[in-house]
Amino acid sequence: MNGHDAMGSMDHGVNYHALWMWKNTVLTAGFFAEPGHKQYGAAYAVGAFIRGWGLRNYGSDSFQLGALVVEKPEIRAVQSQKGRQKDIIELAMSVGMVIAEVRASTTLEPTPSHWSNGKGKPPRHRAALACLTQAERDIVTRVLGGVAKTYHEDMMDALALGAWATRRAEW
Image 1: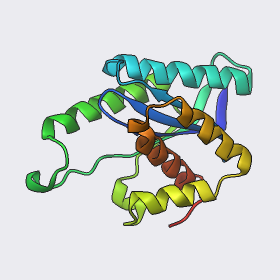
Image 2: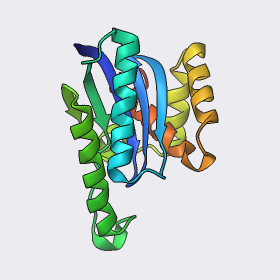
Image 3: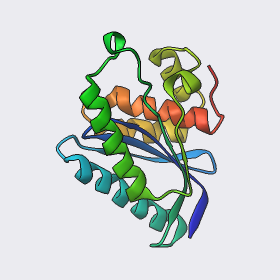
Image 4: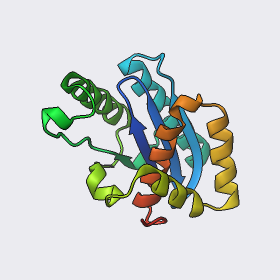
């Protein structure tokens, strides 16, 4: 079954993934794959969460996500690169594992400069929260309550990416 109206928006690290699920552009759930998982373990955890979400929302154990939105890292000159080059390679492998595990109908990979429009994280996070209904903000509060504060920014980045992809927020 294809959840063509279902979308996941994800921010990622080498060993963790922050994910929000959207149905008909409405935020419905969030998930954080713990850094204790190794690369494939975190990818599998994301895939298992999405399959469970699909079963609950679409009544099918053969659910296929309509779209997965994942930020594509930008490679800069070595001197200005935030992380080590090895980290970028490991990050690409980790995200590739998620994409293979999830098997969405479409994968969107905007770069930070494309989707952020040059705006910093705090303004994007505020705009993402402002576009949500109270029920959706309650979901965010509940999900963030189960995630270590160290990773709240990653969860908010994934939320902002989803708000941008659904065209609910602009900055």
